[in-house]
Amino acid sequence: MTARVATFLDLPVGSPGGSVELFRDLYSGTEPLIPARAFMLDPGHNGLAALPGMDLLAVEGKCLDGPGFTRYVTALHHALADVLNPEDVDVVHLQHLAFGATPALLRTLPDHPAIALVHGTDLLFAEAHADQLRVLHDTVHRANVIVVPTSAMADRLRTLAPDVDRPVKIPWGIPDHLLAEPPLWWPSPKNKLRLLYAGRLTSEKGSDRLAQALGAANGFTVSIAAPPHEFRDLQPALRHAGLDVNYLGWLPRRELWKAFAEHDALLMPSTTLEAMGLVALEAQACGLPVLYQPVPGLDEALGVSALPTDFTDPDRVARNLRHLVTPSVADELRESARANAARFPLSVTVSALTALGDSLA
Image (tube, rainbow, N blue to C red; front, side, top):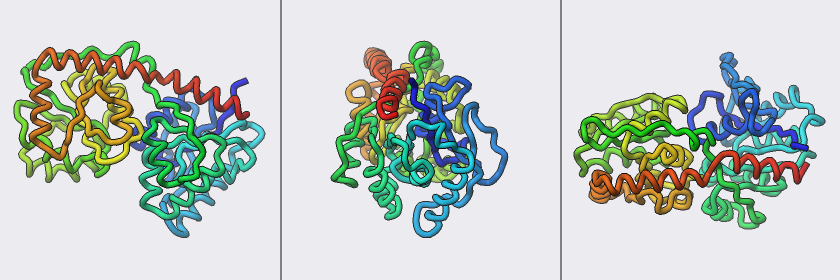
């Protein structure tokens, strides 16, 4: 018997980010990989279009600290209690150790076994916000199993909750159909190195390093795929560095894969912990070499299949970019990239999570 799952990611359905894409991969669709009552937010009662197989809750007031956070969790609990029948659920998937959905689900289904899936933002916010740290501690003690995608995540978790039992390591995966049929890579028609940054332009993603890092290099074009408001905030720094950037917008998933195949390298200048770096693995599946800051999580997932690069050193960035101009080096990195991405099919993640849920149900 496959355990019946309830899960909740308390972000608006159209939010950017790797955790949202993974959530959609696992639980949405007319035939989801993990059948579940899956919830996201429509906080402004905007009538957002729900994904197939997913419910939206019109709850406002999302915050991280203080009395407002308590009220927010209570509102989420009431919204869930109105639509969830405990008898229809066997196991709960908690998408974060922190944030509001986790305590709300645990309050709504207090007697159900729970699997907590740890994402990098959980730990970063728990380090910065007292109420989030409290939720993390409560969740660690309440969850039956804690799942981490990398050993680095387990190590970082133990700094926040030293008494945590040994977490179960289940790497996140990328869609099997991307691995089976990636878009065809196209060489540059102008013989210029085509660089791409794809993702959120937040400080922990290294956005403030991006302009400085490219300052000593030449002979390239650079494109950015990111949320519009974050790109607007970065534009003054890009102009100051004299960079002419091709802004691609915040691309739908399949359009992003196509963009990977139309570039020569992905830049990942992250400044802190990455849960795993799914965007880098998807780029690798498309044969795209990756230059990455070797922060915990990324170095574990990418290793020697990509180019570790100190993005605080523009000269080092320039040297690594010059390596990529050599056809033999670029070909070897594309081959290593594809081989590394093939280690992480989403079907393996699904099988492991399903078996874990069935063992608890």
